[in-house]
Image (cartoon, rainbow, N blue to C red; front, side):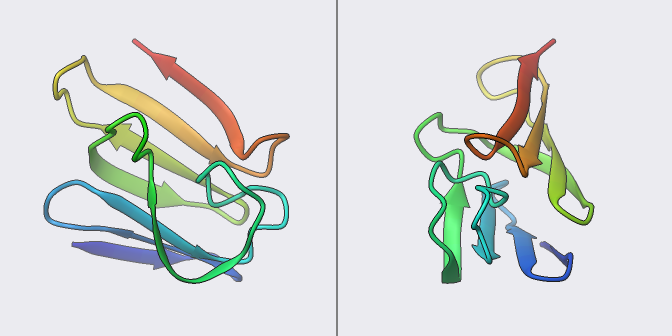
Length: 91
């Protein structure tokens, strides 16, 4: 399990590869598809069934490497953006 924070946002990657986020979310920086802030962990990428291998947290963003289940590895960038997702590109 990995836990990291950046000022007002916090992220936890559990042993099953599920990414959780909580904190201030006024610009969608948690990457959960809303701009509501949360004091309890919310699952990131639940609708897409995303599973992650590792994360790296910056000030208003998080980089997450997806596990290849069932698709190839992907890099997901979540953060301050119009809808909370700066980029989602599978390679």
